[in-house]
Image 1 (cartoon, rainbow, N blue to C red):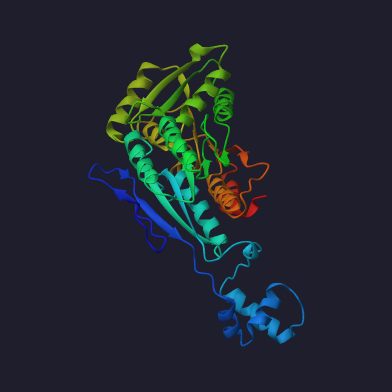
Image 2 (image 1 turned 90 degrees about the vertical axis):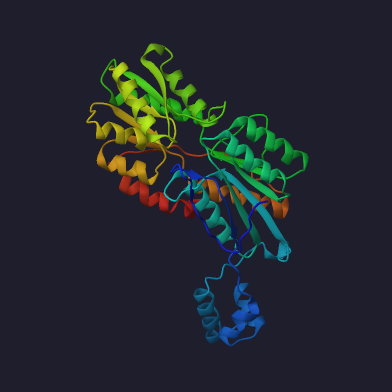
Length: 387
């Protein structure tokens, strides 16, 4: 069964092999202070607090000041939807995403979801995170099976493996449980909303940038991470398609390789062996957020003259950009994705409503060393900049 906990506690579980494995944790809303409590603290009647909240007038300056001081102290958020819902109902939401480590891509999506739960704290939201290992299809299957055994009010789904995602979506649709995609969209499914970049466009842009910064006539390499199971990650395949499309007139310039994330030593041998066999490669595109692994290998072995582009402003990728071992990353604004996904879930649960732009293409940011300081500041504030 899904483990439910009262407070927001996130524990990254590391196995004997040194790798982070999936786990399940729960975030509950922060308890909203009641009007009676505000009134008692401010020394006024509950009716006075209500008039201040709704700006109805007939309140003395001293009473208004006392109420507003308490509201600021308790960080009260007035919910304009409160009259439209039953505050006694608790909504159980499951976010099924890869293991979310702080400072990494999925950790940012988790943070966006948490911020939405906090923002709408006067709605009774109980969000359970069901994590899985994104490099292991069997871990994903196990996590999705646990969700299938539950009966949540809604699901936020970060889909890595297409077959497993479709299987879960079919079950949710049969039970009329709404779900929202983050990070990717899966064909032949019917989510109420989705928030993701156009992955083929990401791959095409990555190829265009590498072609512009590498020496004329260079060869290029696509690096994907190995997965346990018989299926590659959906996003990597779509990005590869866009990358190859850019070089459609000269397909011989593009070579593909894989490296192991779960076995770093073997992964390093694979990368070095590939580069030795392909000396013309002067540009590498890592089709996920693990570009820092390749960048560190190049740096440790003194391999220069190879331009590297990866995805997502993770802590490790930012470090590589600052050091100069990575030329750029393409950013998908994961925190914004998580925040908007939860917003869509709330709109549906309260009003069975979807916005016109519910299936939203997220912007594609290009982050290099020169604009990183400004871009990072924007990323920290992205949830406040939502339309």
